[in-house]
Image 1 (cartoon, rainbow, N blue to C red):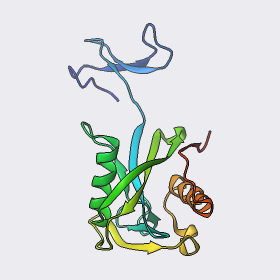
Image 2: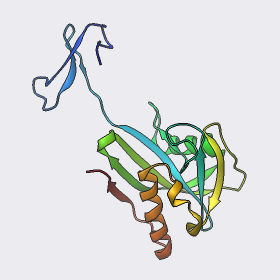
Image 3: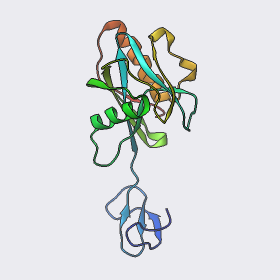
Length: 176
């Protein structure tokens, strides 16, 4: 960051008084510019014992498989984001959202929040960010073709939980 978003003056990276971390601080108006983690929100949509995955049409990780998920927007709740992203990426409608996993990825300043959700019907198809959408049984998951570590960890937990028919909420740290 070079310039203040409030007044356009030059900013300096320093520890503001009363703070413990370096922040970009405006040399003119004194505005402190906080950079906080981005939140990715999505669903693990299930129908019977199958999971809906999307093959990415965009970078990063084009052609790789993932759960429908994306950036949380300002003014949006977690559950609204999860439903929206599932609709945008897979044209799939979900219900009965249950918080399932929170994945901390501090090395890339991201958090993933994934809901377990029930697919309402099998009327789904690729959205603009997906090349393909498909239901997979746990044995069919393309493990070597998964786009992100957070998705891989989520699916591993789900497969284990499915065997026990118990789906506790988890907080998982990757790369700490």
